[in-house]
Length: 502
Image 1 (cartoon, rainbow, N blue to C red):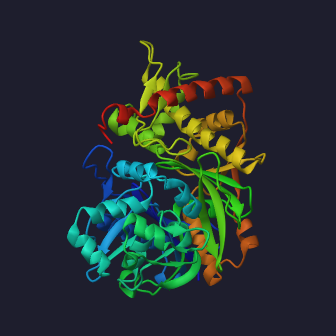
Image 2: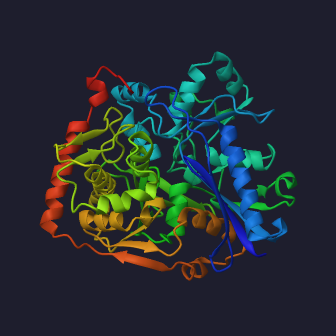
Image 3: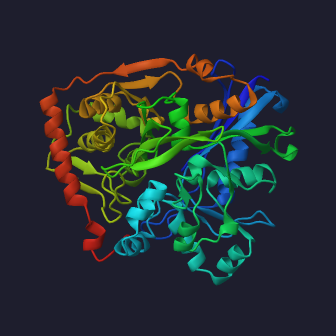
């Protein structure tokens, strides 16, 4: 066997990457797919777009690598999490557009449950907060808006799954309806203490048990791909949510290790070992992975808008032509000129959890230029990550030695330096940036013996660059205080405006 194939299904694009024995990328393909915004604050995908783009990328990557599919030892699947998909079991076709993790339509439902005092008990079971981010209320919304859909779901004719479940179902031509513990833990339906779907939570959210996938280990041969797709029955041997896969790919396999992913959103995870640590600072407790039946847990801070803020400059304001153009534009000025951007375009995630917050720009003067706004955007990305890291430090009570980074925006050297300055911790970038795909590949490879153990994986990880704090601590502190003031001004905006744009 010559390679492991990772299917990395993201929010705005699908990717497929082949890794050889040394961890080197030998074939890769990426394809964007349409985003749908039927109302302000709503975000949807066509699940068939997800599947077709992912299949196309896999075939292209295999061709680029020049491999016979029989040379592929295993497939690992990693995915955008929380996005909810419902499909007809008999036809395998989606019965509703997928409701994406960014979607805010269930904010009022979450608020009603919160007013009933249910959030503490839900958090004790799931490690999560009552927020539209998670899958359960998305499923509730779809079922509540169609009596036929709810009836079919109760009779077992409709399946629910996160994107991993959908892809595995398609890869096996309907043969499997499974997920792994890391993805299950993002639904608000999974008890992370017992490792099972929780009957009381299913009743609370009105989600019929027959809809749910079986929960498997994150590194385990769950089945094989139908020969129809690649001409070979390749084992599906790894499944993990994208952020958990990135933590594994960054070798965050010991308690206290931290990674931050700069994608559409920003996601920081800290490995906390085999016992869940429940946050006192509004972070999430999640399953990192389950190996041989044993769960490893993580603290997580999820920020909804990271790289999406750069996309807004590109597509919405047209200040740049390509996302990469933001670095030279922002570097053309020494600072943001007093401008602070809070990119709460779909509310704020950790540690604020305000679905009614909205995007805010303060400090604009006649002298404000596109370069100042570009720099303020990079600073906003770094500030949001620093907020999460500060909360994580308080929860874990640890002095962090470094934060390992990945994702598209980690290529931006200016952003990484700003991050080190604001967070006051070294930022470490690996040689292989595709750590989400690498983590999925590692999980799959371990299950089939392509890579034999964790020690062999540690030899694959290599350093690219370390960014140390250069800005004086006092200057960083002042910048953080200004940021906190700007955030306060963004909170509750949609609620104050009578719910417009929720």
